[in-house]
Length: 99
Image (cartoon, one colour):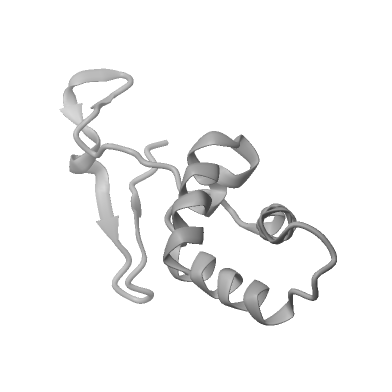
């Protein structure tokens, strides 16, 4: 498992359609364990893992990194962190939408 995970990590960095798995390390580990249990000598094991991650990853929403320290577009001195609010009913955190 450890040796295969090195190959998988390389794939996640190299192929754009597999990059959506980044940030889902536990899910990738579950997919690898499932591949080990399901594999039935029908071809290359690495190809089987690659295709499994490709097909299973189609429904994953990728993470996007944003900095709250970036300036707000209309005001260069104001930062995005100043517009972060928390809904007291749902505890959801979001950016305050100005109208």
